Length: 196
View 1 (cartoon, rainbow, N blue to C red):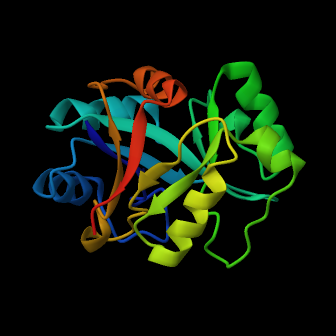
View 2 (cartoon, rainbow, N blue to C red; view 1 turned 60 degrees about the horizontal axis):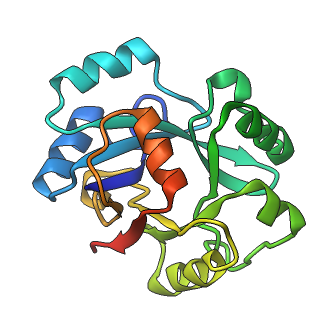
View 3 (tube, helix red, strand yellow; view 1 turned 45 degrees about the horizontal axis):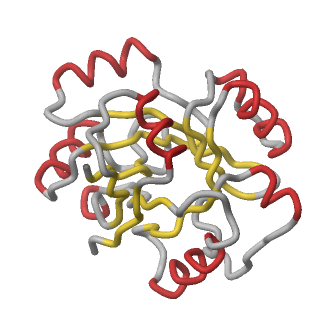
């Protein structure tokens, strides 16, 4: 199953020009079999997300991209906005207590691969295929991923229709819920792929 694990939509991500309907349509057109909404420092209301998911031909998952003192974090399975923090250590604490998984997003984007004891401790891995990063940046991220517990993930980091599906993560099994997504990520049975 091919899931784009990094997508931004209006109105929750102010930097995005992409509506949820346009995201779904573009994903289906490009052969993406599931999308994960990773809004900046915000998450979709559960009731709104369920309503959207009912009319979607592909599964829709919810995560968050947090802006922290250690860079951007893709967090899967955090219990809600009370767990969102600009302090990576606090996000890690919330992830530990809830069973969530943290991935360092686009770790080579600014040209610096920040690796420290906390990086290895807090994150299970990194985003190794980001559809908005260059090939060289993704190669650097893939090199960094070898030091982590799990393989790297992929996502388009889409903010516009043209960016949808440039990168994704291929899973072995069908996934239908956020809980199943977290378990599939925890299993390590997936690979990041470039589709650009």
